[in-house]
Image (cartoon, rainbow, N blue to C red; front, side, top):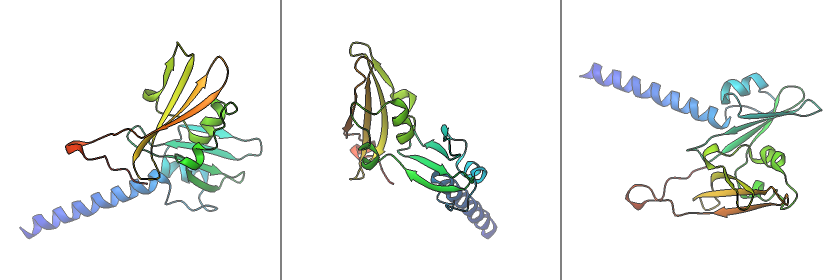
Length: 177
């Protein structure tokens, strides 16, 4: 009986260690700015969904953690190939940087990363494309943020909604940062 418990305890500890390592890679929290290199960022966080290279040699990597996740991380790499910073970008501060009538698709992508394809919709009658992101709002509630691109006028607008998404037993789903 003692051997069985020992084996179960070891298996549980290994499982916890793997889970913790995966969580560190999820957000890049295991990486140190100024120390970690681009290959280390990719080894930890995986291949980015999108990447941009600036004329000065800096790079930006987008890591959306959906569709079930509520976060997108941007890793900024300096011209020297070292990590400058990692930002979580699905928050009200970043959403506020989208300027109605001025921001375009490329600016939105560089700010928030790609939305999930299943949440992209085109409304023919309005000639409007909608991108949507799920995120945890300031009250730690699951919410949705939409960016709408009007193809006729070029006007960009945004919406924020907090639908009553209920899980089992009418309990709101966990939403953590």
